[in-house]
Amino acid sequence: MSSDILSLVLTVLSLIIVLVAEGTYSYAAYWAFNIRRALAVRIYRNQALGVGLVSLGFILIFFDYVLVSSFNIVIFVVIQALVTAMFFFFIDSAVLDGRMSDPLLRDTIHWRRIRLWVWAIFVAASVASICIVVYYAGLIGRNLSLLPFWVSFIGSALEVVVVVIVGIIALPMTAVRSRDPYLRKQLAWLAGFVVFLAAGGPVPTSPTYAPVVFALQFAMAFCLYKSARSLAPLNKISKETELK
Image 1: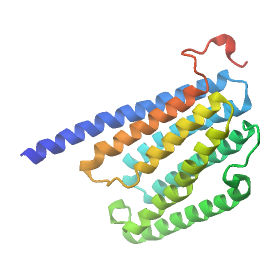
Image 2: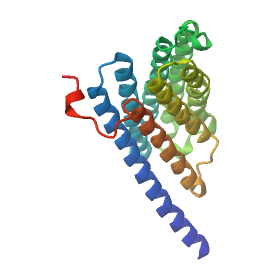
Image 3: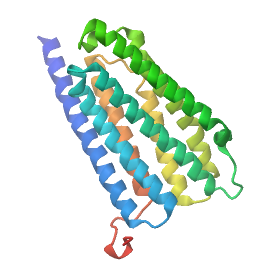
Image 4: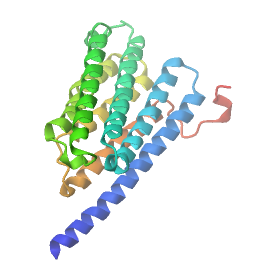
């Protein structure tokens, strides 16, 4: 009896947290796109656009897990790969844009030299992951729970090794080297988002840990919101400042 009550409490708590997290992602996307419209500096506009797209991407991932995963494994994995690629593209552009605000124009972790190699590894791993899932989908049908652990681990390893490690190393260094206070703060919040994203990787996916997973999702969404607001620290954006 007590286990049923605990399960009910965890379910309700998880539902509340996920609704708050998805609402925060939506709010972050709303602010990011509105801030982009109000700004004239190209770097700021690029960063605001990136935050908005990443926020929408994580909303898409939620619906990918809830809706798509139950009827088509291949589409599920393709959507995951596309959203991860979009996030990696944002990190790539953030590091390149951040270099322009460094008075010494330092190339963080020699990113301009290694980025093409990292992109090649990323694309190759994504294609390999999708092909393996397509192969297993033909064997087991549409039941996602029957996928071997190592097949699903490929996607997680891709995200952690390529996206998260690059983000954790490059973004803080870029923020420290930047002399633009707004861009520095924005990159710092973005780095915090990547840290929470990495922290969610080792957390088990059992129902007991669902509140922890969704709480990390809320923390990620809050970091994206603060990242967008850092580009325009005013409480309200007046119509006179919008770029017509």
